[in-house]
Image (cartoon, rainbow, N blue to C red; front, side, top):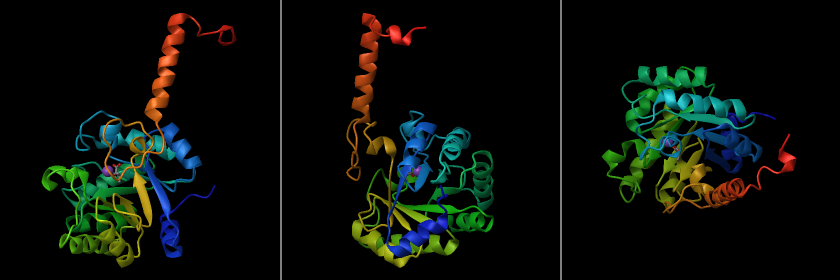
Length: 264
Ligand code: KIV
Ligand code: NA
């Protein structure tokens, strides 16, 4: 199968074809999503709260994310594999960003990296792209800055809409191949999508983006409790796994598993 490349996403935008992105942190999910034709797999720093049990995305480290990215990159034969640069691993300088990104490309064999931030990250995006690292930008609500942004809030309402557009333009100008917009009003995201020639990928940014992304445990029902409004739940994996685990435990206890057919 032909590998999805960054230029394919740009060509899809030009043709008006949308594409799908999901997070993935391991072999099984990467295999299923690749087979399903998901164009982009993101080894998100959302692994912090989806794999490692932290409350936010902030604590996860480069050393923790690299083995996950390696598993996804080894498994996916078609999808473009993008690795998130975790908090603290790129903000300090373009050199720091390059050092971290190179680790994801060399040690994990990811195809691209993603970083959060608008105008302040222009030097980082430029350094990476000039050094041969494809960069996906992430603007609007940026979870690594949640303490600065005052929690999970929609960004770019009213006058601030212009700022989101300016940030997307700056990311394109600096060389980013795509831009994620998180929790941005749908009309602002639609304007951004028209204003830039690189693909926009929405999460809580309405239907006019060129692509969409969701955290897979949210979309397929592993996460329980209240979900953000922008999540649509496509499956109840929590319920399916719970039933399976309970049935297994019950059969072990009543002696019906293993049966003769499972016994040597
Ligand atoms: O880490 C993540 O899962 C993300 C996506 C939600 C865009 O950054
Ligand atoms: Na992220």
